[in-house]
Amino acid sequence: MHKSARYAALAASGLLALSSLTACADDASTTASAGSAAKGDGKGTKVKIMVGGLDKVIYLPAMLTQRLGYFDAEGLDVELLSEPAGVQAETALVSGQVQGAVGFYDHTLDLQVKGKAVESVVQFSHAPGEVEIVSNKAADEIKSPKDFKGKKLGVTGLGSSTNFLTEYLAVKNGVRTSDITPVAVGAGPTFISALERGSIDAGMTTDPTVATILAKNAGRVLIDMRTPEGSDAALGGPYPSSSLYMQTDWVNSHKDTVQKLANAFVKTLKWMSTHSAAEIADKMPADYSQGDKTLYAAAIQSTLPMFTKDGVMPANGPETVEKVLKAFNPNIKNADVDLSKTYTTEFVKKATG
Figure (cartoon, helix red, strand yellow):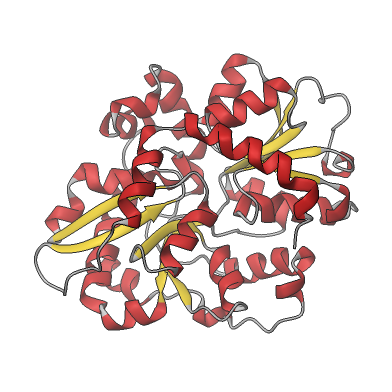
């Protein structure tokens, strides 16, 4: 799908830079590889969940659920692991290293056309929560995605959801995917460094990275998709993104465990909808604020509109995602996707009842 020769050096530099990401990401890679299968249903049931960046605000419900004690309350022993990009969480799930992944819903469509049955069981969001940031150096040249031609555009990883959305914004605005260069730069310090050094002209990232860039005056917002309104303007509809997705066979054979996970996550989403960003920030690990709790709370505040209150897939959301992917992804463009098999509301509806 990508021109590997052209990207090899860029991807390598991005992967080297990923070593400076949070320690939890480094720990996750080793822990996940040594993982064991989940135990049977019942009290203390062990479940491993890989998150595409535990400290990203878009995936905040994962750690928050653990911090609130909701997994324990359901009799679950949940181990949260972290990788810098959602595509790596997808890989861990499909390979059987983990039982669940917290990442973008769009991976379920991509995997279906590759013959893998995966479904979203709790939908955290109805907007991407992503922001396209342009560097100060390139701000005069990039006024909209129409100006992406010939530019180096940062994404968390090649094949990631940020990569998908970047290519869609290009195609939607008359720029061919072959005319842009996606560069894998991760998130956090590695993304910011790439922006400041000029390794990328612009890039797609999330909070708290966005808040840090703006505080440092290292770049400017080009497209803001942290709200349903922003998603609609950029993508033409609600874009369900952050979710808990799992292999369909595992869901069907562990319904009791999946229901407990849904109960815990829905309780968290409801809690988030009735508490302030500062209160949410107070519940998170201290190192997530990187020494500036006020800035971290502001990052959460900016992203809160993307979250659902009940974990239910938004109406017309899957159709928007399919439209976006079909615009540039040749595998999906020429395939019949059965959207009904990419998500289920069976568990969240019982949890909200």
